Image (cartoon, rainbow over all chains, first blue to last red; front, top):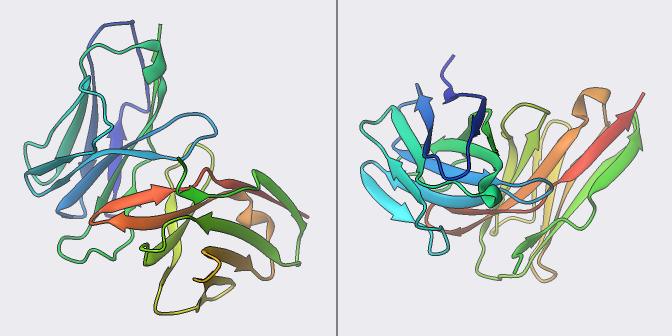
Length: 114
Length: 111
């Protein structure tokens, strides 16, 4: 089945130690998104890629970066995680050129900061 | 400032009855809305959507109603089943590829 896969499902890192979360998709969708969701809050869009075109949300901290080496993979890099970055991180994809298409989500990576 | 609001954190309904989940938005420029369902330890999955040119969209047991003047939409599930127990998120398209989500409503369908 075509899907969006996030690895790892759970990630623990130390305060200030860089961490990378990964997302892969078999849907061949050109748009990929990263969301941050904290407990009892709405998923918050961090950035998205349209093909290789990177689009950062205005309020996304500089501490968060992303890479998309090819259509299938997208990475979220947190350069110096703080305690406030502990959250669920969701990756999603959608079909190119048809804006009004629902997103397909992965199951998320839960990030803990020690 | 929350542009999409789901004011009921939780809802319990008897099996077979109607579940009504509500969502309010603040920006009249939003013209496409979606509902997602989320089970524990899984990502959200798309349920149903509606464009602002419509006031109702139906898919099996699920119907979404849109009241543009009130900036309000609702999801009706009839009849409710225990497998519908999940968190439901409302989302609005706030710009090209920018989806704005509500905080979710946890639905519990009692057998």
